[in-house]
Image (spheres, one colour):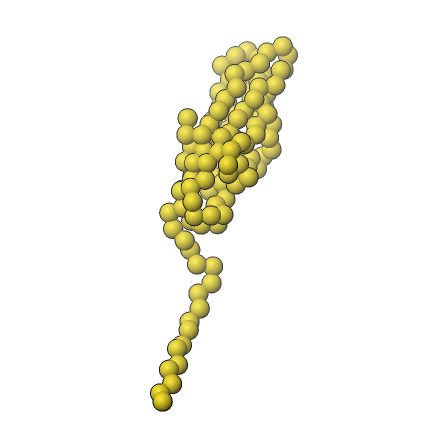
Length: 116
C-alpha cells in the first residue's frame, strides 16, 4: 500500500490511514518510520495505536516537505502482544511530491540605471 502526499514546499500534509481489527481481542501496534526521509513524517497522536475488538482506528500521518526532491519512507506498524494475541506487522510506503512553491515574502525592486 502506498500513501501519497502532495502539496507546496514547506507545507504540512495530513493523510488518514484506517486500520481494522476483525478479531475478538484488542490489538496494539507500535509505529515507526524508516527510510531516507523518515524524519519528514510524523504521527501527531503518538506512536502507539490500540484497536478494540471488532473496531477500527484512524491514524493520522503528517508530512512536511523540506526539499524539492520527492521524499520516501516506510511506515511500520509492529504488533505488541496484548492478552496473548499478536496482529500481523503492517507496512505502508510513503511518497511525496512538491507540486508548487508559495513565496514566504514578496519584494518589489526598482532598478536604477545611470547614464554616462
